Amino acid sequence: MGTERNPLMANSADQSDVEKVKIFVIAGFLGAGKTTLLKNILGWETDLSDTVVIVNEFGDVGIDGSLLKGARSGIFELAGGCICCTMQADLKQTLQKILNAYKPQRILIEATGVADPKAIKETIQNREFRHRMELDKVITVLEADFWKIRQDMGAFFLNQLWEADLILLNKIDTVEEREIHQVLKEVHETIPQSPVIPTVHCRLDPGSLWLEKYPNDPELEAKEFFPASNLPFMHNNENQKPHHDHGPENLGYVAFSFQESDPLDENCFWEFTQQLPWELFRMKGWVRFPDRTLLINYAGGKSEWGEWDGKGETRLAFVGLRVDTEGTIERLKHCIARSQAHF
Image 1: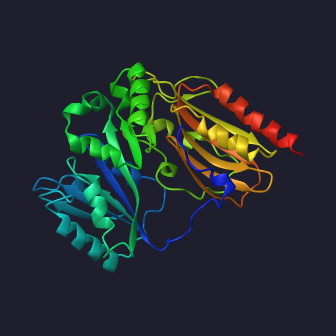
Image 2: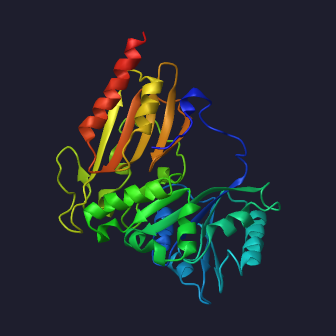
Image 3: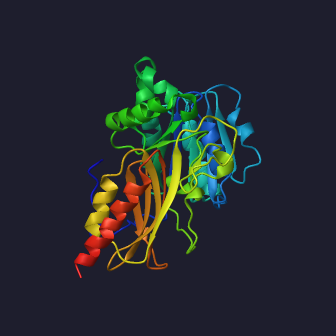
């Protein structure tokens, strides 16, 4: 795992610059699933009334924008070039128009398949914008089958991955299961700073993109990550039966949860998060420690933390690929024992 600083020993969330518009850039090679991801995001139950979308098409005719018609968010199409080079001025003009006319809290930018996210980041961080907006994440969609031919794809292909704050290893249903684990391992080793989430049709939960303020719901369930209707080969660890009898061959997704009223030892839980296997790629919920309860949003190897003023108990939901569910639960129980030993 990485060398993240332990947030449990410091203030949990940086609340500075909350007034700035947050920018999310969706990058990835042609056909990887960028528009599919954007459509998924716009279909979430999350309130996106304060969100504006910019879609960049390399050709003269905008296609992606037409696929997104009917979305609740405002859609701006930039066609005829790439916003990382020939259309940088157009991107600046569009951003200025959006900031003045819409005053959104969030802007989603879908780049072309040949865009360099670094150049887009430089535009967003330009002095004329940096006091009004900030780059939250570059999300790069990687088609699983393309990883093995990455050296033939050109420098910009790897740049899209290297600049990512989150990588979606998409279309894992098109490769052999043994290849999924190998690619997952190689991507983490090659780009260790980026969380990686394996997906089918770019399906993921909102908490993978932004820290959610989860309601005080006593029935937090792991199925929130991947609704059964969207992932037909999803397994539930209680009965190990697929939700549907159609779709691709089961790839071994498992969902499970952990609930405990006694506090967990902070150092022990931190060690637990640092030793999670790459195959366990999602964890969300809240964790009770002796002196406080914190919200955790773990995605593909990286964690975000927030204050939690709800019920003081630990409730965590997990999703992974053929992970040792019983072993994971036992390690969490060990953290309870270490906490009790301090009393």
